[in-house]
Length: 111
Image 1 (cartoon, rainbow, N blue to C red):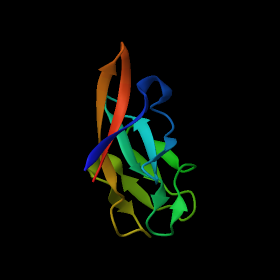
Image 2: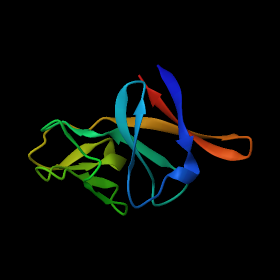
Image 3: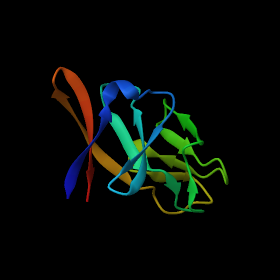
């Protein structure tokens, strides 16, 4: 179980998740609508093993919609499935923001 330094907080937005490869795993990061939280979650829809990076992100609900089969996952609820055809929650990862040299840096915890 380790934290990985991913990016500067300034690279992220609330409107569109950004893809990163962390320890060989493709994940998406996006700022939460409120507070200074960052969501981190798998880039692949577990229903069809298709990338979510071009999916529709709803910042108010913290939900991502798969662009291929329209499965919906709620990231704020630990990746809970909100709409089929997916039936397994999407992996969501813990994040931490650390101040380094006067810059906010995002770390992701992978277990």
